[in-house]
Length: 326
Image 1 (cartoon, rainbow, N blue to C red):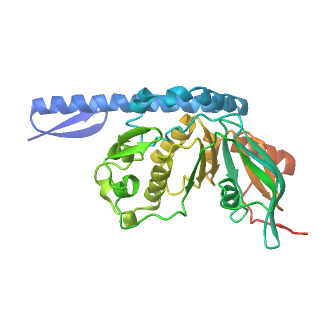
Image 2 (image 1 turned 135 degrees about the horizontal axis):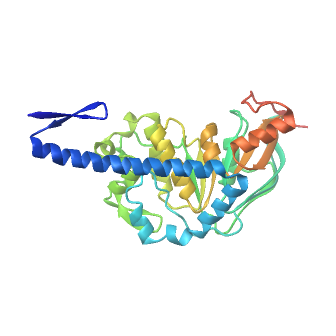
Image 3 (image 1 turned 120 degrees about the horizontal axis):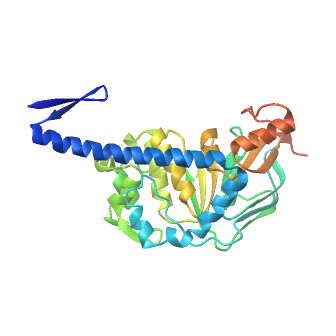
């Protein structure tokens, strides 16, 4: 039989007798208590973030660096077994991360940027914004060594291990999610630890039958999570994330934010998602048109305020304009 419980204006059906109802109700109340605690934690984190300015967020970045030893401990590894998205920490990051020294880059007669100087500090989460075609992905390819600047130099710190998540990289559509991430092995190396492959897949919200889906049948958001799961397992200490939020549902997006904020290294993120950039970034690299690029300390909202003061108008995505090469 069935029992229908009226609880706070809702009808909740339970299958079974009175004893079964009591057991199911107890399980439901325990789950609600967990969800409520998680909700309170999320609200507290939101309030903390709102109350912080750029300096507060920069201090938080330094605190993440100081927590490296805990992040790299086996206890931390075990505590993160149930995380939806977990970015394994790489080796300890030194004082020098990425330095762009007077770099210039053009395509044909189109100048992307000229004499660009940027120093990315340890612990920074740097957002990159600009119109399509401005040169954001080109900057990533130069940092990763896939392309060279026309002039100037890019210096990468000796302790830096890059992890580059590029959505354009090929996945094998004939493989399952599990096979693509684990190469069919029950155990995989994540950072410096061995971990069960299926548990690692689960951290990126591939659970149960989802791990047996063929790559060719995945949605855009699922492919994005698969890219991250596959490439982040190496354990780099500087992340290059190219449009990581594309097609993600709200819960996975929040899990990604928390994973990046907990990561004890540095990250550089290309994104059009202003809310995401507001929540995670300590610095911004902004392509402002006419081949001009600005490096700003602060999140997107703080950059937008600065842009408004400098240009007398709100920052909006615009069709990109280039200066011509001399």
